[in-house]
Image 1 (spheres, rainbow, N blue to C red):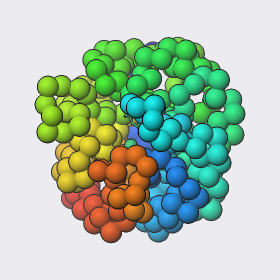
Image 2 (image 1 turned 120 degrees about the vertical axis):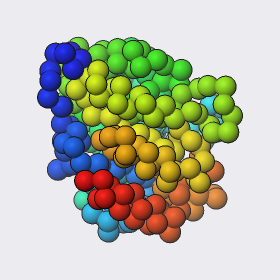
Image 3 (image 1 turned 45 degrees about the vertical axis):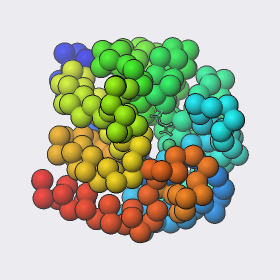
Image 4 (image 1 turned 60 degrees about the horizontal axis):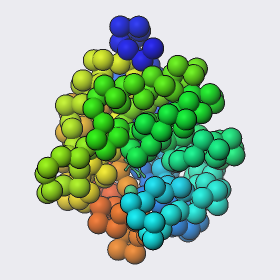
Length: 264
Ligand code: PEP
Ligand code: MN
């Protein structure tokens, strides 16, 4: 169902007026994890000031270590909803358990399925049964074919509003946290009719690489870019090394939108 052979025209996923897949570049920004109302609102306010609509933030955090911050859970989703309503934004947040979906969709606009759960087939099926767009991230060691099949699980249950997100894969390289597979973007766009985004934060794990990789994503034809923004990354409870503070984000956004304009 997700194959380009089944449907020649691009799927457009509409989220609060943003038509992801329409040929323009769309942006998803926000903190790695929701830590407090104040922290999330600080980012929400900046997004609104730039005319941006898509706010991300983790409430259920799938952390490598069980001793790391696990997220605020439903309370985190409630904070996101409040901030989104105050600043006229849509909420994108990860769900890790099929049992949470029903409650979470009261607060969410987009269900994110994270890299670690790309082949959690019960979660994929559950997300396929609700009427909410899904942002599906590529698994840490998933081939493109496995990634496409994961999207197929969602669509086979009736939900065709899927955005694919390349977020880097595990390779032997250690200079970056993951290896951004930039060529996955045109491959996915050729093989499927779904919009494709690039998460520059989790693919690189390095603040200094966010701008060049975001430029590459735009230049190669991604439908959107995701990156993490935190009012004070030094004290962030997760992903402290790669989130942008607000002044860095201002500059980042200015440069990528400038490139985006020049490429059109
Ligand atoms: C995230 O986007 O918050 C996240 C945990 O990313 P990934 O699943 O790609 O590691
Ligand atoms: Mn993160």
